Length: 249
Image (cartoon, rainbow, N blue to C red; front, side, top):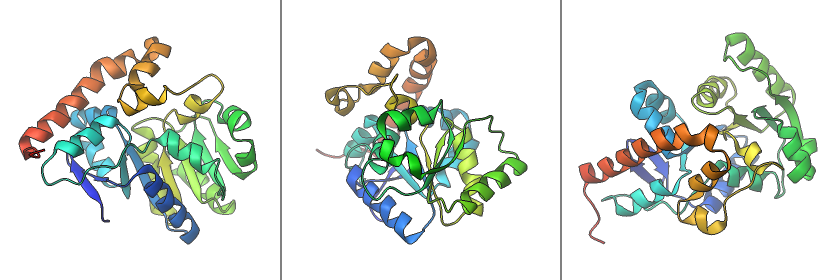
């Protein structure tokens, strides 16, 4: 694929959010299966601790930059395409469930995603053809059941709201069996978009401070992620800059 930025060993698409949305819709219309990873600093940190996780993510069809630190790194890295802004799972879901055409979809995981659909995406509710919020163990029997449900309901797009690395492991297993379906790992997107959630102000999103807003709302649950994983991811980005040189700008 064209428009690629290599950051910390990952080939990340440098397209804009609008460009990625157009690509997803193009693939959905053509029934071209794709596994999309929205990469952030937490995932970088996890891949640093677990080399097998890095290999898993590298097998995705499309990797986009979820966090501003990745965008900034692309601006400074030598011989690297500049990433044209963040493409978050939240932004992708919000667009695909709001703007026509809305494709038939499935949700696997999440905390009461139907509550979010009823609250924010009423027009999309009828397009949810399969929902599973139980325990996901990625067993062969469970994967086969998911495959049958997705096939029988002619589903075009599957939202995997399981967190990492489980959503990535499941995406790889399903991708092999369903070459015409789009898989998107979205973590806690439905909780953020739900009635009890909420996004940071636009200025915090653009300045890379959305993590601070989320931490202020749920410090007990998120402190470990941001105190331990976030700094590791930032160090990886800095190390990647020095190992590759910097732009003269």
